[in-house]
Length: 306
Ligand SMILES: Cc1cc2nc3c(=O)[nH]c(=O)nc-3n(C[C@H](O)[C@H](O)[C@H](O)COP(=O)(O)OP(=O)(O)OC[C@H]3O[C@@H](n4cnc5c(N)ncnc54)[C@H](O)[C@@H]3O)c2cc1C
Image 1 (tube, protein in one colour):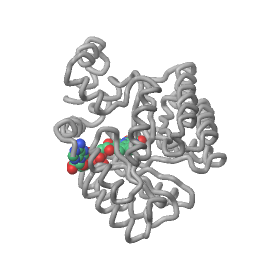
Image 2 (cartoon, rainbow, N blue to C red):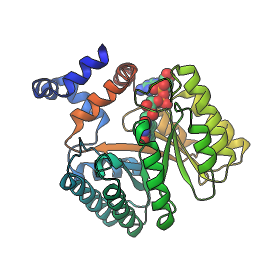
Image 3 (tube, rainbow, N blue to C red):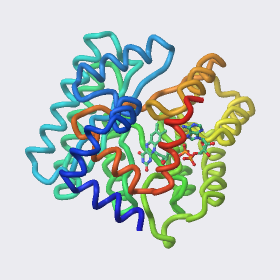
């Protein structure tokens, strides 16, 4: 019910105008999105890098349904990577890319070609790309495209979602030398047939996957704000003797900044995921709609900076 209401609101230009002008929304947006323009992304990146954080930048895109839209997204990433390199912000900053924004829903080959162009630009800029993971219907296609890209750009990163039942097996496949894998809980509403439904089962799966990645030969990227999972990550880092070059923590822009700073102070590599772009309304509303529990997530973040 709540989900339907939020989704309906996300498609209403009237509600968008209301939300966009409400003081509460402006605070939320400023907190979670770096800004609308490439310059805003660069400014936020500079501030984070100056504070000792690494960064991954996500250009917010909505409903890519034409090749022209996909090309525009690709070109924005090419511009961004050039500007990051010119500003001396690579390799500290890399980019996160959604294949759906590059045309995956209507032309997989086009999405792969666009992603390849972004990987080449990242390589030229001295940095890397991570392919975000979307809903489970895209997992096979995304991992296929990842395998193709990694032939030419071996440091291209994957994202695996602990809530999916298949993910332990995917972790085993990808825990090989040179393989960068971001492990997150997963943000989409998925059916019981493919995904663990309870928070407890998702957390247990996260720990099993974390153990596989941390004991493997690849480069784990532990994306979570969950204090218990962060503590387990720290414990496994000691156990498997992984230093700041051997794995990293990742968190979203505006969420638990003090915890991000604490981990940097402890000597860990911490990467902040920074979304930017005009389409912030859809981004925020979709995050809430995908999982109504995220309402509490955003609420907590507004209430506390801890
Ligand atoms: C860098 C990054 C990249 C991501 N990429 C993807 C992706 O490609 N695909 C995808 O599906 N999902 C992605 N996600 C989203 C992810 O799947 C989760 O939906 C999201 O991170 C929330 O899960 P959590 O692990 O933080 O745990 P939650 O269960 O949301 O939170 C766990 C606990 O963390 C603490 N906490 C959380 N927020 C706060 C706060 N503001 N203040 C105080 N305590 C807090 C609380 O104790 C809470 O109980 C990504 C997340 C990150 C951080």
